[in-house]
Image 1 (cartoon, rainbow, N blue to C red):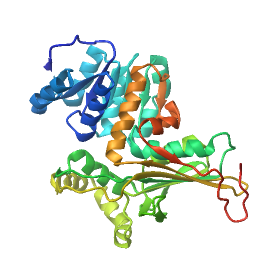
Image 2: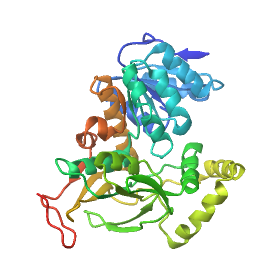
Image 3: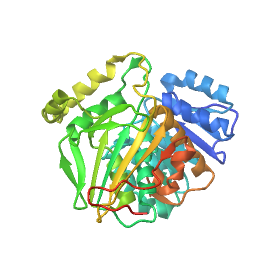
Image 4: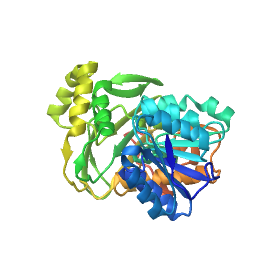
Length: 381
Protein backbone atom coordinates (compact mmCIF):
# COMPACT_ATOMS: atom_id res chain seq x y z
CA UNK A 1 0.00 0.00 0.00
CA UNK A 2 1.17 3.52 -0.80
CA UNK A 3 -0.05 6.66 0.91
CA UNK A 4 0.14 9.73 -1.33
CA UNK A 5 -0.37 13.01 0.50
CA UNK A 6 -3.24 14.93 -1.10
CA UNK A 7 -2.76 18.26 -2.74
CA UNK A 8 -1.15 17.30 -6.05
CA UNK A 9 -2.17 15.03 -8.91
CA UNK A 10 -0.39 11.71 -9.32
CA UNK A 11 2.00 11.95 -12.25
CA UNK A 12 1.94 15.75 -12.25
CA UNK A 13 4.26 17.01 -14.97
CA UNK A 14 7.61 18.24 -13.76
CA UNK A 15 7.72 16.49 -10.40
CA UNK A 16 11.15 15.64 -9.00
CA UNK A 17 11.00 12.73 -6.57
CA UNK A 18 13.48 12.72 -3.71
CA UNK A 19 14.20 9.21 -2.45
CA UNK A 20 15.97 9.43 0.90
CA UNK A 21 14.48 12.83 1.71
CA UNK A 22 14.85 12.25 5.48
CA UNK A 23 18.64 12.16 5.20
CA UNK A 24 20.96 15.15 5.39
CA UNK A 25 21.66 15.27 1.66
CA UNK A 26 18.17 14.32 0.51
CA UNK A 27 16.61 16.99 2.70
CA UNK A 28 19.06 19.60 1.42
CA UNK A 29 18.38 18.65 -2.21
CA UNK A 30 14.64 19.04 -1.64
CA UNK A 31 15.15 22.45 -0.01
CA UNK A 32 17.38 23.65 -2.89
CA UNK A 33 14.76 22.63 -5.45
CA UNK A 34 11.84 24.14 -3.55
CA UNK A 35 13.75 27.43 -3.32
CA UNK A 36 13.96 27.43 -7.14
CA UNK A 37 10.21 27.00 -7.48
CA UNK A 38 10.50 23.39 -8.62
CA UNK A 39 8.42 20.48 -7.32
CA UNK A 40 10.29 18.12 -4.99
CA UNK A 41 8.12 15.19 -3.88
CA UNK A 42 9.45 13.47 -0.75
CA UNK A 43 9.48 9.68 -0.96
CA UNK A 44 10.11 7.32 1.94
CA UNK A 45 8.94 4.35 3.96
CA UNK A 46 6.18 3.98 6.54
CA UNK A 47 8.43 4.11 9.58
CA UNK A 48 9.23 7.75 8.86
CA UNK A 49 5.99 8.68 7.17
CA UNK A 50 4.72 11.28 9.65
CA UNK A 51 8.01 13.17 9.65
CA UNK A 52 8.10 13.00 5.84
CA UNK A 53 4.59 14.44 5.56
CA UNK A 54 5.44 17.25 7.97
CA UNK A 55 8.57 18.14 6.00
CA UNK A 56 6.62 18.05 2.75
CA UNK A 57 3.98 20.38 4.20
CA UNK A 58 6.70 22.82 5.28
CA UNK A 59 8.02 22.86 1.68
CA UNK A 60 4.55 23.22 0.21
CA UNK A 61 4.78 19.90 -1.59
CA UNK A 62 3.60 16.32 -1.05
CA UNK A 63 4.93 13.01 0.21
CA UNK A 64 4.74 9.49 -1.15
CA UNK A 65 4.99 6.89 1.64
CA UNK A 66 5.68 3.29 0.62
CA UNK A 67 5.06 0.26 2.84
CA UNK A 68 8.27 -0.82 4.56
CA UNK A 69 7.63 -4.38 3.37
CA UNK A 70 7.77 -3.24 -0.25
CA UNK A 71 10.98 -1.25 0.23
CA UNK A 72 12.86 -0.31 -2.93
CA UNK A 73 10.61 -2.52 -5.08
CA UNK A 74 7.64 -0.52 -3.85
CA UNK A 75 9.36 2.75 -4.75
CA UNK A 76 10.16 1.41 -8.22
CA UNK A 77 6.53 0.38 -8.68
CA UNK A 78 5.30 3.85 -7.69
CA UNK A 79 7.77 5.50 -10.09
CA UNK A 80 6.42 3.31 -12.89
CA UNK A 81 2.83 4.11 -11.93
CA UNK A 82 3.05 7.85 -11.28
CA UNK A 83 5.74 8.76 -13.87
CA UNK A 84 7.66 11.63 -12.21
CA UNK A 85 9.86 13.68 -14.51
CA UNK A 86 13.03 13.14 -12.44
CA UNK A 87 13.99 10.72 -9.66
CA UNK A 88 16.84 11.44 -7.24
CA UNK A 89 18.10 8.28 -5.52
CA UNK A 90 19.61 9.20 -2.17
CA UNK A 91 18.90 5.93 -0.38
CA UNK A 92 22.32 4.36 -0.94
CA UNK A 93 23.25 0.72 -1.64
CA UNK A 94 23.55 1.80 -5.27
CA UNK A 95 24.97 -1.48 -6.54
CA UNK A 96 21.51 -2.95 -5.86
CA UNK A 97 19.14 0.02 -6.13
CA UNK A 98 20.45 2.13 -9.02
CA UNK A 99 19.65 -0.07 -12.03
CA UNK A 100 16.23 -1.04 -10.64
CA UNK A 101 15.16 2.54 -10.03
CA UNK A 102 16.72 3.88 -13.23
CA UNK A 103 14.83 1.33 -15.31
CA UNK A 104 11.61 2.27 -13.49
CA UNK A 105 12.06 5.80 -14.85
CA UNK A 106 12.11 4.58 -18.45
CA UNK A 107 10.79 5.46 -20.90
CA UNK A 108 11.03 9.21 -20.82
CA UNK A 109 11.79 9.86 -17.16
CA UNK A 110 15.20 10.85 -15.83
CA UNK A 111 17.31 9.55 -12.93
CA UNK A 112 20.31 10.63 -10.83
CA UNK A 113 22.19 9.23 -7.85
CA UNK A 114 25.19 9.77 -5.57
CA UNK A 115 27.03 6.51 -6.34
CA UNK A 116 30.80 6.84 -6.08
CA UNK A 117 32.07 3.26 -6.18
CA UNK A 118 33.46 1.11 -8.96
CA UNK A 119 30.58 -1.35 -8.86
CA UNK A 120 27.44 0.80 -9.09
CA UNK A 121 28.80 3.54 -11.35
CA UNK A 122 29.96 1.27 -14.22
CA UNK A 123 26.70 -0.68 -14.02
CA UNK A 124 24.64 2.45 -14.50
CA UNK A 125 26.86 3.73 -17.31
CA UNK A 126 26.37 0.37 -19.03
CA UNK A 127 22.69 1.33 -19.43
CA UNK A 128 23.66 4.10 -21.89
CA UNK A 129 22.21 2.54 -25.04
CA UNK A 130 19.07 1.35 -23.23
CA UNK A 131 18.51 4.88 -21.90
CA UNK A 132 19.09 6.38 -25.36
CA UNK A 133 16.40 4.14 -26.85
CA UNK A 134 14.04 5.04 -24.00
CA UNK A 135 14.62 8.79 -24.29
CA UNK A 136 15.78 8.92 -20.66
CA UNK A 137 18.81 10.55 -19.06
CA UNK A 138 20.65 8.77 -16.25
CA UNK A 139 23.33 10.57 -14.21
CA UNK A 140 25.47 8.75 -11.68
CA UNK A 141 28.11 10.16 -9.32
CA UNK A 142 26.20 13.43 -8.82
CA UNK A 143 28.20 14.53 -5.80
CA UNK A 144 31.41 16.12 -4.60
CA UNK A 145 34.11 13.58 -5.39
CA UNK A 146 33.24 12.62 -8.96
CA UNK A 147 32.33 16.10 -10.20
CA UNK A 148 35.00 18.07 -8.33
CA UNK A 149 37.80 16.00 -9.88
CA UNK A 150 36.15 15.31 -13.25
CA UNK A 151 35.51 19.03 -13.80
CA UNK A 152 39.15 19.97 -13.18
CA UNK A 153 40.31 17.30 -15.64
CA UNK A 154 37.86 18.58 -18.25
CA UNK A 155 39.13 22.14 -17.85
CA UNK A 156 42.81 21.16 -17.95
CA UNK A 157 42.32 18.98 -21.05
CA UNK A 158 40.12 21.43 -22.92
CA UNK A 159 41.32 21.93 -26.53
CA UNK A 160 44.45 19.88 -25.89
CA UNK A 161 45.71 16.54 -27.15
CA UNK A 162 45.21 13.34 -25.20
CA UNK A 163 47.48 13.26 -22.12
CA UNK A 164 49.59 10.29 -21.09
CA UNK A 165 48.89 10.45 -17.36
CA UNK A 166 46.34 11.91 -14.96
CA UNK A 167 46.17 11.91 -11.18
CA UNK A 168 43.11 13.16 -9.34
CA UNK A 169 42.74 13.77 -5.60
CA UNK A 170 39.35 14.08 -3.88
CA UNK A 171 39.82 15.98 -0.64
CA UNK A 172 36.44 16.33 1.01
CA UNK A 173 36.14 18.23 4.27
CA UNK A 174 32.91 17.23 5.98
CA UNK A 175 31.24 18.08 9.27
CA UNK A 176 29.47 15.20 10.97
CA UNK A 177 26.29 15.30 13.01
CA UNK A 178 25.86 13.18 16.11
CA UNK A 179 24.09 9.90 15.46
CA UNK A 180 24.68 6.36 14.29
CA UNK A 181 26.94 5.62 11.35
CA UNK A 182 24.16 3.89 9.41
CA UNK A 183 24.16 0.83 7.17
CA UNK A 184 24.83 2.61 3.86
CA UNK A 185 27.99 4.39 5.03
CA UNK A 186 29.19 1.32 6.94
CA UNK A 187 28.81 -0.86 3.85
CA UNK A 188 30.74 1.63 1.70
CA UNK A 189 33.67 1.65 4.17
CA UNK A 190 33.80 -2.14 4.41
CA UNK A 191 33.48 -2.57 0.64
CA UNK A 192 36.39 -0.18 0.09
CA UNK A 193 38.56 -2.47 2.19
CA UNK A 194 37.43 -5.62 0.41
CA UNK A 195 37.79 -4.18 -3.10
CA UNK A 196 41.35 -2.89 -2.64
CA UNK A 197 42.96 -0.23 -4.82
CA UNK A 198 42.44 0.39 -8.54
CA UNK A 199 44.25 2.37 -11.24
CA UNK A 200 44.42 2.59 -15.03
CA UNK A 201 47.59 1.23 -16.60
CA UNK A 202 48.06 1.04 -20.39
CA UNK A 203 44.42 1.99 -20.79
CA UNK A 204 43.09 -0.85 -18.64
CA UNK A 205 41.82 -0.86 -15.09
CA UNK A 206 44.18 -2.83 -12.86
CA UNK A 207 44.41 -3.71 -9.19
CA UNK A 208 46.71 -1.84 -6.83
CA UNK A 209 47.28 -1.73 -3.11
CA UNK A 210 44.67 0.10 -1.03
CA UNK A 211 46.42 3.16 0.37
CA UNK A 212 49.01 3.32 -2.42
CA UNK A 213 50.11 6.60 -4.01
CA UNK A 214 50.22 8.41 -0.67
CA UNK A 215 50.04 12.18 -1.16
CA UNK A 216 51.12 14.86 1.32
CA UNK A 217 49.56 17.92 -0.25
CA UNK A 218 49.70 21.61 0.52
CA UNK A 219 46.36 23.07 -0.47
CA UNK A 220 46.02 26.46 -2.20
CA UNK A 221 44.88 28.01 1.10
CA UNK A 222 48.05 26.76 2.82
CA UNK A 223 46.47 23.94 4.81
CA UNK A 224 47.95 20.42 4.63
CA UNK A 225 46.05 17.32 3.53
CA UNK A 226 46.85 13.65 3.11
CA UNK A 227 45.27 11.26 0.65
CA UNK A 228 45.87 7.77 -0.70
CA UNK A 229 44.56 5.37 -3.32
CA UNK A 230 41.12 3.79 -3.06
CA UNK A 231 38.61 2.20 -5.48
CA UNK A 232 36.40 5.22 -6.16
CA UNK A 233 34.46 6.31 -9.23
CA UNK A 234 36.61 9.42 -9.56
CA UNK A 235 39.06 7.08 -11.32
CA UNK A 236 36.57 6.07 -14.01
CA UNK A 237 35.29 9.62 -14.52
CA UNK A 238 38.83 11.01 -14.90
CA UNK A 239 39.77 8.35 -17.43
CA UNK A 240 36.65 8.96 -19.50
CA UNK A 241 37.18 12.72 -19.38
CA UNK A 242 40.86 12.58 -20.39
CA UNK A 243 41.23 9.28 -22.32
CA UNK A 244 44.65 9.02 -20.67
CA UNK A 245 46.13 5.49 -20.57
CA UNK A 246 47.51 6.02 -17.06
CA UNK A 247 45.17 7.33 -14.35
CA UNK A 248 45.43 7.20 -10.57
CA UNK A 249 43.08 8.47 -7.88
CA UNK A 250 43.58 9.30 -4.24
CA UNK A 251 41.07 10.36 -1.62
CA UNK A 252 41.21 11.85 1.85
CA UNK A 253 38.83 9.06 2.90
CA UNK A 254 41.45 6.34 2.34
CA UNK A 255 43.76 5.06 5.10
CA UNK A 256 46.87 7.25 5.22
CA UNK A 257 48.59 6.28 8.48
CA UNK A 258 51.44 3.74 8.17
CA UNK A 259 49.66 1.29 10.48
CA UNK A 260 46.33 1.42 8.66
CA UNK A 261 47.97 1.18 5.24
CA UNK A 262 49.89 -1.89 6.41
CA UNK A 263 46.80 -3.56 7.88
CA UNK A 264 44.32 -2.70 5.11
CA UNK A 265 45.12 -5.57 2.67
CA UNK A 266 44.84 -8.24 5.38
CA UNK A 267 41.65 -6.68 6.74
CA UNK A 268 40.21 -6.61 3.24
CA UNK A 269 40.84 -10.32 2.74
CA UNK A 270 39.17 -11.20 6.02
CA UNK A 271 36.16 -8.97 5.38
CA UNK A 272 35.68 -10.43 1.90
CA UNK A 273 34.33 -13.54 3.69
CA UNK A 274 30.63 -12.79 3.49
CA UNK A 275 29.58 -13.71 7.08
CA UNK A 276 32.42 -11.55 8.44
CA UNK A 277 31.47 -8.72 6.09
CA UNK A 278 27.83 -8.78 7.24
CA UNK A 279 28.90 -8.83 10.88
CA UNK A 280 31.29 -5.90 10.39
CA UNK A 281 28.67 -3.84 8.56
CA UNK A 282 26.09 -4.46 11.31
CA UNK A 283 28.53 -3.49 14.07
CA UNK A 284 29.79 -0.37 12.31
CA UNK A 285 26.26 0.72 11.36
CA UNK A 286 25.30 0.83 15.06
CA UNK A 287 28.37 2.80 16.15
CA UNK A 288 27.63 6.33 17.33
CA UNK A 289 29.34 9.46 16.01
CA UNK A 290 29.82 12.73 17.82
CA UNK A 291 29.25 16.17 16.37
CA UNK A 292 32.50 16.81 14.51
CA UNK A 293 33.44 20.03 12.72
CA UNK A 294 34.99 19.73 9.28
CA UNK A 295 38.77 19.29 9.47
CA UNK A 296 39.63 21.96 6.89
CA UNK A 297 38.09 25.21 5.74
CA UNK A 298 37.39 23.93 2.25
CA UNK A 299 36.90 20.76 0.24
CA UNK A 300 39.12 20.42 -2.82
CA UNK A 301 39.10 18.57 -6.10
CA UNK A 302 42.60 18.36 -7.58
CA UNK A 303 44.07 17.07 -10.84
CA UNK A 304 47.55 16.84 -12.31
CA UNK A 305 47.70 16.13 -16.05
CA UNK A 306 50.84 15.24 -18.02
CA UNK A 307 51.25 15.19 -21.82
CA UNK A 308 53.68 13.21 -24.02
CA UNK A 309 56.04 16.18 -24.38
CA UNK A 310 56.47 16.42 -20.60
CA UNK A 311 54.06 19.32 -20.12
CA UNK A 312 52.37 19.17 -16.74
CA UNK A 313 49.27 21.14 -15.72
CA UNK A 314 47.71 21.28 -12.29
CA UNK A 315 44.33 22.62 -11.21
CA UNK A 316 41.97 22.79 -8.26
CA UNK A 317 38.27 23.19 -7.53
CA UNK A 318 37.37 24.72 -4.17
CA UNK A 319 34.09 24.01 -2.39
CA UNK A 320 32.84 24.29 1.18
CA UNK A 321 31.55 21.34 3.22
CA UNK A 322 31.73 18.25 1.01
CA UNK A 323 28.25 16.99 1.90
CA UNK A 324 26.67 20.41 1.41
CA UNK A 325 28.38 20.66 -1.98
CA UNK A 326 27.11 17.19 -2.88
CA UNK A 327 23.55 18.34 -2.18
CA UNK A 328 24.10 21.42 -4.33
CA UNK A 329 25.47 19.31 -7.20
CA UNK A 330 22.57 16.86 -7.02
CA UNK A 331 20.04 19.71 -6.97
CA UNK A 332 21.70 21.36 -9.98
CA UNK A 333 21.62 18.07 -11.93
CA UNK A 334 17.99 17.39 -10.98
CA UNK A 335 16.95 20.91 -11.96
CA UNK A 336 18.77 20.65 -15.28
CA UNK A 337 17.08 17.34 -16.07
CA UNK A 338 13.67 18.76 -15.10
CA UNK A 339 14.24 21.67 -17.48
CA UNK A 340 15.08 19.31 -20.33
CA UNK A 341 18.76 20.26 -20.48
CA UNK A 342 20.06 16.69 -20.61
CA UNK A 343 20.27 14.26 -23.50
CA UNK A 344 19.30 10.57 -23.58
CA UNK A 345 21.91 8.16 -22.28
CA UNK A 346 23.89 7.46 -19.10
CA UNK A 347 26.58 9.87 -17.90
CA UNK A 348 28.67 11.21 -15.07
CA UNK A 349 27.66 14.82 -14.25
CA UNK A 350 30.59 16.58 -15.95
CA UNK A 351 30.27 14.42 -19.05
CA UNK A 352 26.65 15.53 -19.44
CA UNK A 353 26.65 19.15 -18.32
CA UNK A 354 30.33 20.11 -18.71
CA UNK A 355 32.82 21.51 -16.23
CA UNK A 356 30.68 24.61 -15.68
CA UNK A 357 28.28 22.53 -13.58
CA UNK A 358 30.91 22.52 -10.81
CA UNK A 359 30.72 26.32 -10.66
CA UNK A 360 26.93 26.44 -10.85
CA UNK A 361 26.86 24.18 -7.80
CA UNK A 362 29.02 26.65 -5.86
CA UNK A 363 32.59 25.55 -6.62
CA UNK A 364 35.44 27.81 -7.72
CA UNK A 365 38.22 26.79 -10.11
CA UNK A 366 41.82 27.69 -9.38
CA UNK A 367 43.59 27.14 -12.68
CA UNK A 368 46.99 28.74 -13.40
CA UNK A 369 47.31 30.98 -16.44
CA UNK A 370 50.52 29.18 -17.31
CA UNK A 371 51.33 25.56 -16.63
CA UNK A 372 54.17 24.35 -14.45
CA UNK A 373 56.20 21.98 -16.65
CA UNK A 374 57.69 18.77 -15.43
CA UNK A 375 61.50 18.62 -15.43
CA UNK A 376 62.65 18.88 -19.01
CA UNK A 377 59.13 19.69 -20.20
CA UNK A 378 57.78 22.78 -21.88
CA UNK A 379 54.71 24.80 -21.07
CA UNK A 380 51.80 24.15 -23.40
CA UNK A 381 49.94 27.34 -23.93
